[in-house]
Image 1 (cartoon, rainbow, N blue to C red):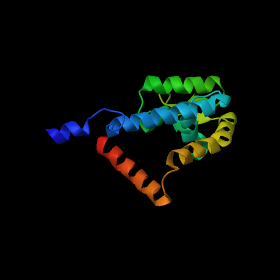
Image 2: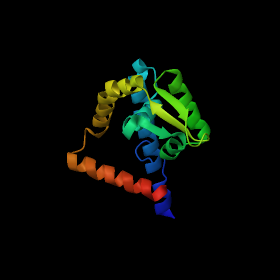
Image 3: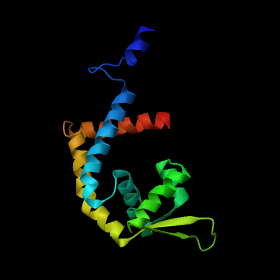
Length: 151
């Protein structure tokens, strides 16, 4: 039992991996949100714009976005609605199946992606600054493996 207890020790010098990942995520989110204030969107909204920006044609179904971001339909609808109000996205129904809602990034949304891209790259650089290029790639592979284990 001793090794198991050691893995979950909670003090400032030794936090469980899950807690460290949570704190890293929160710190990166806070930094990104402060950088994004001038655009009027949150980091989460920015990630949605980038996902559409990087697709061919800048369009995806709402269901595809729900699956990609692993969120509930209501969460997806709320994010899309807020981005539509800011004129960064537009939504429309599928001409063949009116039950399917599609979302498309607008020119304004593309402009936000392009103007904010370097800020996000800099955040990633800042996070990985103490690692060599080889360590960075190894770290990314380890994170992917951890994610694959729990998804």
